[in-house]
Length: 229
Image 1 (cartoon, rainbow, N blue to C red):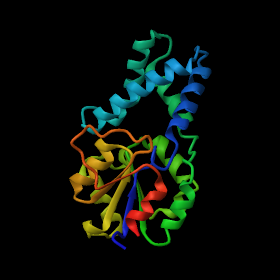
Image 2: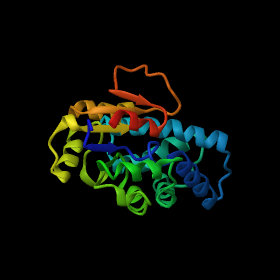
Image 3: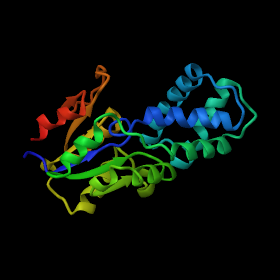
Image 4: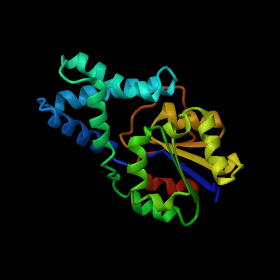
């Protein structure tokens, strides 16, 4: 086998984060008695959230700043000045932490891969959310190491967070490691920065208009098998 270590991103690669985000946003609106229109509010929140996480990856904002700031920007757009962004964020995060729904077919393939490879889970995420979601997940038993960016003070695409995976596993051969994730600017660029092969999980078959070139590209997770075996 070409690889011995598979490093997976969590959300939108293994976990259905779109469903989790939808669940959390709808419920926090309900808690505060605010009118909720999914087609308006969820779409806008996706836009703001994507932008602010990109800022986090570029180290323009910290994890602590990110939490209330995204709702500050969100409220500015929807014209809400009733609820404090930090308070709203805390309740939103509590709902986010309750949902760890997997994408279809994930448990089967991870179970199969765990018999032949070392598996690592590496996520850019908030500790309060990701620790209960991921540690309480039915996938946790299959992973040799789980690293959450806020826990360690580093985030993808920083190569330092990949080195932590290697350190935890006492692993040193970069030619035997593969990073698998859905995000070009964090997962794939991070793997490239660290000097390991990468696999872009692209279920929507989006066009890559960046200069970030993955080693492989798949649209279904089971296609990974044709690469690693």
